[in-house]
Image (cartoon, rainbow, N blue to C red; front, top):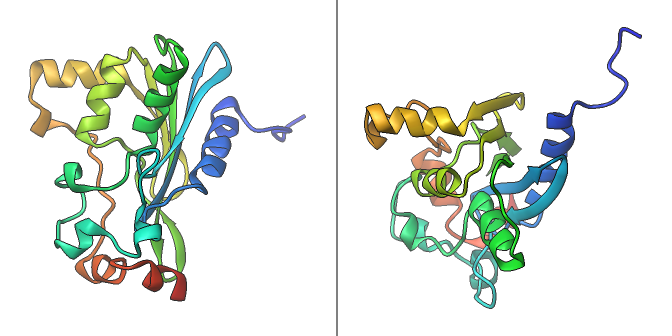
Length: 192
């Protein structure tokens, strides 16, 4: 039996995270996350506004794009909560421990030509939460859609011996100024 007859566990869980990402309400990107412990999904999350608030689609615009904030900066001014952050919050709401778990993140950016893979990595704020939540492994897609796996302990060790700015595994959606301008309003996203 030379061919793989079913997906690996990482492929399986990342495919589920891809489905979760379809609920994303960000005009620029789609992201879905699941957290797995002992081979069970214990939490899910997608990029979206906090419960009971309006998201960018509902408002018809992206505040960060209106303010010309570069991608990867000033997250406190984003209306959305990141996918992996939402998964951590959802686990806390349910009283579920994440200790020893693996977080999966499927992440793409919206373009005129359809969704494009980018390196699925947490921002600095989410990376801090992943470390403090006791998660041990991070799995995401790379720019070609292939699976990449990281040790959370190695991330913490890098920061222990260096500094946060020395981080070698950094989030970057690689949005050009033109793409950022286009994704200011929900109308632009749906018209293209």
